[in-house]
Image 1 (cartoon, rainbow, N blue to C red):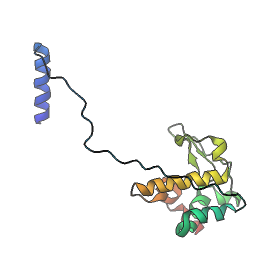
Image 2 (tube, rainbow, N blue to C red):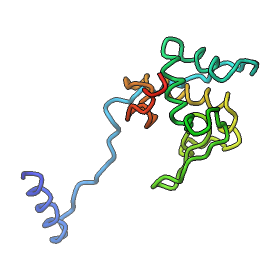
Image 3 (cartoon, one colour):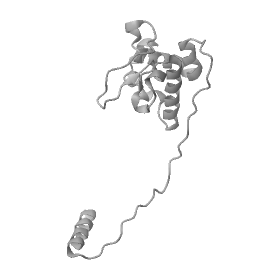
Amino acid sequence: MPLIYALAYFLYLLQKGVPTPEIKFIPPIFEVEKKEIETPIEIPHEETIEEHIQRLWGTRGNEAVAVFKSENFWNEHKAWKCDRVGAVNFDGTYDVGLAQINTVHGRPDSEMKNCHKNIDFAYKLYREREGWGMDGFSAWYSYIYKRHLAFL
């Protein structure tokens, strides 16, 4: 309530023409350190898609394969669809490629339709979320809603 009284008094002073203090921007007391997550080193693309995923995710490799099979509608195609484009989302964005990377990230569709580059960027997003103290897979609906479990 005291804030309401202060605001009312401030407006009263403005009406009366009484000079009021200048309002200045005060910078935040602390700043969050932004860490750049490196994209994995370019590798020859002789390895299979699953090998590529397994190599990046290590001990969570099987889980990553399951998440991306679910995102990629594996049941429907029984194969990786690197050029898959999802439906338009409520905010006008859409998801592209094997890991269904949202266009909000500003990556060109042509890059996201390349399976290996799509996986590399998905891993970057995964690591970024881990850096925020979250589960790295929390960016994918199939993980959140446990749809990936059918592929484990």
